[in-house]
Length: 156
Image (cartoon, rainbow, N blue to C red):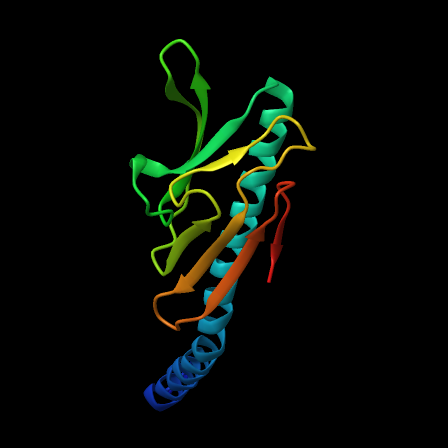
């Protein structure tokens, strides 16, 4: 008498086929959520960066500056926080943020400058106000973040 233990090849192939089918269906629903989450994470990072810079200006008692990394006009790789050294008249790096969001392009369109944002130590004085434009390279989705003269960021 033959002792039958285990599954037949047809049963195993059927289960593997069902798992692959369900995985592919789930992947179709999961991809847009990942893209949306990447955009929201980038928005949150920019908000946090501006908030931190505003607090540093107040704590240090003099203006600080946000500029794109590597002294370019491309804000997509990250932002650096600097202060002016009055002896050398050069910006000195305080902190930098890098983000690894290859699907998003980040542009800054400021009132006075496209390559730097000035955050004042006096809450009553105006700072550089303008708009961050985040554009998804794949879906062409666009998110605008408005920075007002008090240093507050909101999505428009």
